[in-house]
Length: 206
Length: 343
Image (cartoon, rainbow over all chains, first blue to last red):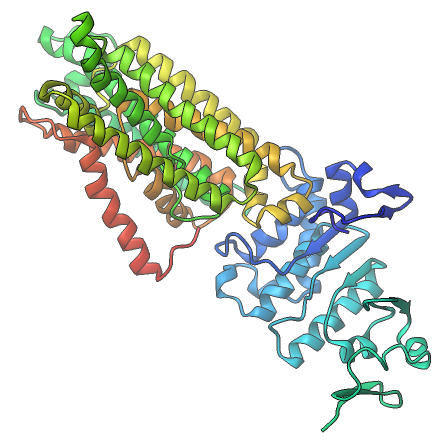
C-alpha cells in the first residue's frame, strides 16, 4: 500500500487515483511510512533523521527554508524529542527511536501516515505512549494514521477504527461495533484464548 | 545543522592544510628544493637552479595534482559505496573495480609477453597500461551493473564484487606463473601504486574523469542523504532508487576505475578517509561530507606520497604500501575507539 512492495493483485486507489499513476514525488507528499526495518545508518542525529522527512518538499540540494524548519521543530516538539535532537540514533532506546521515526514521517507532512507494527520491541508503557501520541497527532492535525499491530487489546481501547484481517473475511469498523458484532470472538482458537465482550479484552483459558 | 557556519572553520583549516601539503609535496623528494624557490617557480619566476625548475614544472607539479585527484577521487568513491551499500567496510575496491583494473594490467603486461615471442615487440607502455586497466575495470563494472539489475539486494552485490576480486587475483597468479621475471617486475611495479610519471595530458584526462564523477555525486547529494535511512525509506521519500543506484555505481566506476588505471591500486584511502571525515565533522549530511572527503583525501594522499618519496634519499617506496600502513591502523583505531563501526 505504501509502494514499498509490489502489489499481489487487484488495484489500490488513493484519492481517486491508482497508486502506480502517482509521480514518485507527489506520492511522497501524500503518504509517509514508518517501517520495521532498521535504519541503514544509526549515525544520524535525531534532528538529521527527522529533517530527512522534508526531502519531497525541498530543492535539489535539500536546502531547508523557513517553512521546512518550522515543520521540523513542530514535529520534534509533538514527539517530545527536543532534548534528544542532537543525540545519535544508536544512543536512543527503542521507544525513543520509534518516536524519532514517527517524527520523521510527521515532518514529511503527508495526509496519510502508515506505520508497520510501531509497538513491537516496546514495553506496555511505551506501547501505550506511542499509540496515544499517534491518536493525538491524528486529532490535532487531521491526518489519517494507519498502523498494523498484534496488540488488539490496546487497539480496542485507543483506536478510532480497526480492520481485523482474518483468513476468510476481514471486517472494518469502530471498536464498539466490532465487539457487538462479535468480530473478535473467533479471532483466536477458543480453547486457548477467549474474548470478554464486557471488558473488551482477551482472557487466556487455563 | 543546515547552516554551514559551524563547519566554516574546519573547512578553512582543511583548505589551508591542503595548500601546505601541496607545497611540501612539491618541495620534498629525492632532491629537496627550498620552499621559497618552489613558490617562486610556481608563479613563473626564474629560479637560479634550472634543474630544480625542470623538476618542479615537469615532474613534481603533475605528481602533486595527480595525488590530489587520486586522494580526493578514491575517498569520494569510498563515501558513495559506504552509503549505497549500507556497509561501513565498503570501498571502491569491493565492487571488484580495482581487481578488474589489475586483471587488465596483468593481461597486458604478462599476456603481451606470451604474444611478444611471436611478434618480438612490447605492447606494454604507460598509455596502453592505463587503457588496459580502464577496460578491465569497466568490463567488471558492466558485469556488476548487469547483475545489479537482477540482484536487488545490495549485500549480494557486494559479495559478487568480492568474488570478482578473487577470480581476477587467481587469473593474475596463473599468469605470473607463466611469465618471465622482467614482465612480472613491471606488473609488480604497477601494483605498487604511484602518482608520479604522469604527463600533463594524462593528468588532464584523469581530471576529466574525476570531474564527471564529482558532478554526478553532487547531483545525487540529496538522494545519498535519503539512502542513509535505507532503500525503502528513500523510495518512500520519492527518490527513484534504482536510477540513483545506477548513476552512483557509474560515478564510482569512473572515479575508482580511472584512478586505478593511472596510479595503480591504492588501498585503504577509499575506506578510511570517509570515516575520518565523519569523525571530523560529526555529521552524516553529504553536503558537508562530499567536499570534506575530497579535501581530506587529497591531503592524506599528498602526505602519503611525501612519505613514499622518502625525502633526501633516492628510494621511492610503494605508495600502496604507505597508504595501507597508515590506513589500516586508522581503521583499527576507529573500531577500538567507537566499539563498532558505524557510518
